[in-house]
Length: 251
Image (cartoon, rainbow, N blue to C red; front, side, top):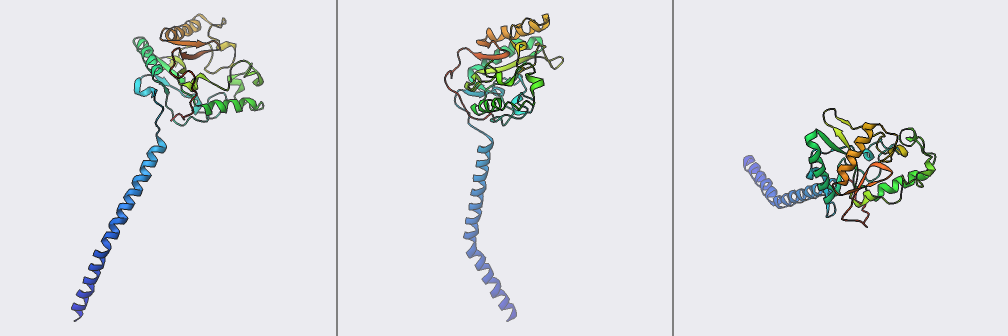
């Protein structure tokens, strides 16, 4: 009788488990669906669909070097700039292909382009403007603008409420000697605010002048126009978005 009772109890347990199976299956399916949803959201959070007409430079030319200053503390503000999330270079498509052509011309001489900044979201420009209005925030003055009063940065054209970078076809760049890994001597550092950074500034050595002219000649002969306050700054002449200022993040 005891054995029969145990068998009867075991049978009831088995039947109960069988009865529960649909609920467990539903729970498992719902759990998998929830995990899939979380995974999809995660992918969306860490990726983005950049606007049509923009590309990641690394998808066009992998050998161009970059040092995105605005994602680091090494810039004229002294801290990462809003809108820069990942170390990736984004440009309008024709700009990226123009840089690829220049890189191909430099390669036989063991030289490479190096990008400091490319597409820049409007929120980053707004960050610059807010910083420029706080006159006592001069953390990086000695390195980046030792001879310029901060209240003159707007007047002299170093800070503006709109930037060609935000249209996606402006690039800040230099040339690197691949044999040494060092940038060519251009006579002033990138983002240095002062007459020393004017492209055709006279107080340069022969080598510094030659290096600037090399960069300038390469960019001009490939469809770019220069900015007369900064030797490193060039904009594609036939830019595809001449009136549009974008604000998607760099990531």
